[in-house]
Length: 78
Image (cartoon, rainbow, N blue to C red):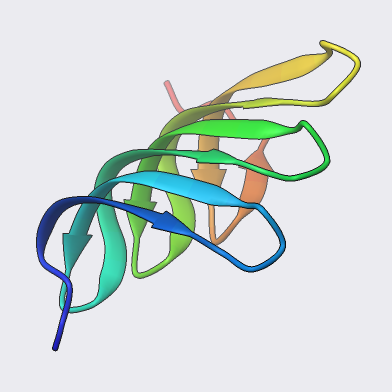
């Protein structure tokens, strides 16, 4: 069975994903709450943070911007 549409997945380590699925992968908009207390809210492509999003660390520090392949993109294109 392949996940598709909106759904919630809870991993054994306590990580919770709520958002869109396509072809059994996180695709579209979603939110990941990690067991550590960190959180990502934004866009996903094939299980990766990809596009606009916000990552928040457990201490409240955050990065908001563009992600490419699960990494912050510090490049600004004009």
